[in-house]
Amino acid sequence: MVAAAPPALAITRALARVMRQDRGRLMAALIARLGDFQLAEDALQDAAASALIHWQRAGLPAHPRAWLIKVAGRKALDRLRTESRSASREAALAELASLDQQEEAADIPDDRLRLIFTCCHPALEEKSRIALTLRTVCGLHTDEIARAFLDTAATMGQRLSRAKNKIRAARIPFTVPGPDDWSDRLQTVLTTLYLIFTAGYTSDPAETRDLCREAIYLTRMLLSLCPDQAEVEGALALMLLTDARRLARTGPDGGTVPPAEQDRALWDDAQLQEGRLLLHTALLRRRAGPFQIKAAISACQMERPQPDWPQIVQLYTALLLQEPTPVVRLNHAVALAETGQLRSALSIIAAIEAELDGFQPFHAAAAAICARAGKPAEARAAWLAAIAASDREADRIFLRRQMARLPPNPD
Amino acid sequence: MQYMLLIYTAPDAEPVYGTPEFQAMMQGFSDFNDRANADGVLRAGEALQGIETATSLRRRDDRVETMDGPFAETREHLGGYYILDVPDLDEALRYAAMLPVAAFGTIEVRPLMSYNPANG
Image (cartoon, rainbow over all chains, first blue to last red):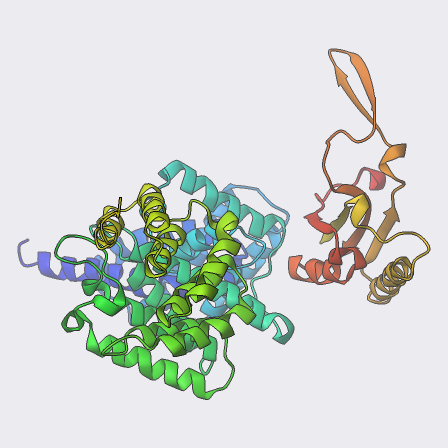
């Protein structure tokens, strides 16, 4: 019995690896056939349970993915036969029955691009796109997703189930968008992936699944499925350049350290190199988009001995044409102040104050600009507002440190 | 699959009758109708008279209450609808974007339940 343990363990690990690495591919193939997210998820779960038993008895099959798809198809058939739920049931039954007759294929078609575009469909709420992508493509559990977004598992479960129901009931198609919609839809996908990345960047490092890794994994997958897309390269570059600084972003006192003051020995050089190369490749395509511009800004912030602020000002000016949002205007103001254009920076701050009131980065930036412009009283008030609006201790430490650099009150 | 396109507009955002903008809007609807008819997807469509002609009704405890005007006080009002028969939501959204009102109002796109009492 002792001798049987290692192979059993090896099989369990092999199955876990297939379910982890090929989850997106398996789900995509199943959804393409079944037209139903929930049924695909349930059937794949059934097939994995079945694999655990059969593979331990008969050994690892030659084509594990194809094995899982075939068994999942049968499991879906069983489920459809026992629950008479929809009008599309008969069609799905016929499709599955014919599938079961086929010779066992060596591999399954790759429908992951269709899957990503469906999970990130603009008819779904932004948070639902994020949750559905993490659940369906990355295989995160509902409670893991819930924790990352500070929701209860029940609330997140309801959100996921609403999204899957809407896809079925409103018939959101399982397709890659055509040329007319391509660029808008691709931005929606990339924005979703980037939101996953930023959620990981600000989350507790003790989380079981690192959302930064998941976002980078998803964006790499997207790039392999639609190569030569400048914006996909730009988004991946932005994530790699940001993630490369992860260890350096918190100082010995636990406070946030801005890129210009970070210890560059802590930067991940291999990742920086890859990010810069990708950005370079993207820019050569001469199809600038918001993600490429943001990646370029990130690269400029890492210039030594100091960030290339004049270039950053230009890049924000270009970004404003594509994304005229208050947050981009705020970052533009910060860059202007760094190049000494304090009057312009202050007038932008005044113009966006109403819209960004209560937003921590706004008050922090306003404080730094006021301090530089010789307005210590305004700076102090803004720093206090920023500290009050912070929900992370690291940011509060940083802000207090900044505030302490103010010259003492003249009165 | 059948979808209803519910057309919502705010009265103050609509072009005024008799202006060139109003003409352009009517031309837009006419083009839309021609296109949807030619594509064979148009099942129904009507404009509604203004909310000043609306009456809302509800029955509570066997008492019928009627009220002047629409039930919900919102800035945008339902002004008309289309029913289209298209393969999926993307197609329905493509048509919705062609409606002239999309430029200043809102089009709500909803699938119909596959149950029509008029066919029973």
